[in-house]
Image (cartoon, rainbow, N blue to C red; front, side, top):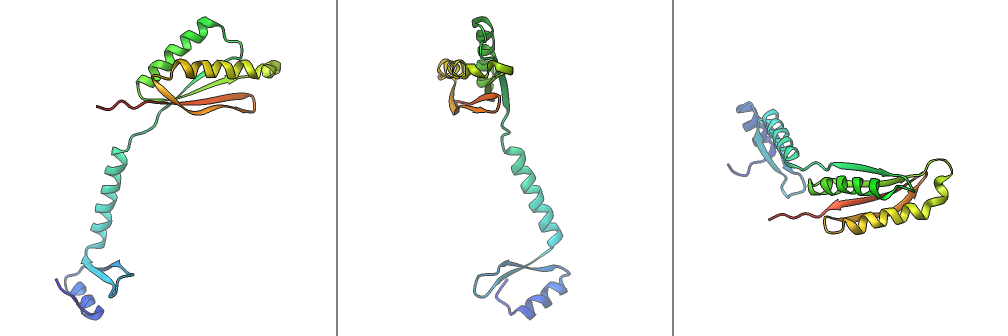
Length: 147
């Protein structure tokens, strides 16, 4: 390997039946490499696929409340929320207001804040309760406990 003028490099590439690929066009002189371009693309695609497989996928679990959810139902849903956070999934807790129940926005917010407070040892609030149409939504992300 050495430094060649572009015409000599093209000659070497055609001689070996390979491609002359510009690696760094901004360098002075531009850096080129004699490689099999199809093989290079294949290797790059393979690397990208392997990286994508290693990336962790975020699972979002939802829990739905009403503005006047009673204590038993709340505890039942809270236990499910704890399980989801322990499994490493994000939690989307929301209060759904049907019909005229929208007048109980404050009760819905209190319910979500109570849930966040009781789950603070398992996860941290990613988004505070926010009203979007007929839904008041809150996101809780699990606390990572890697050893």
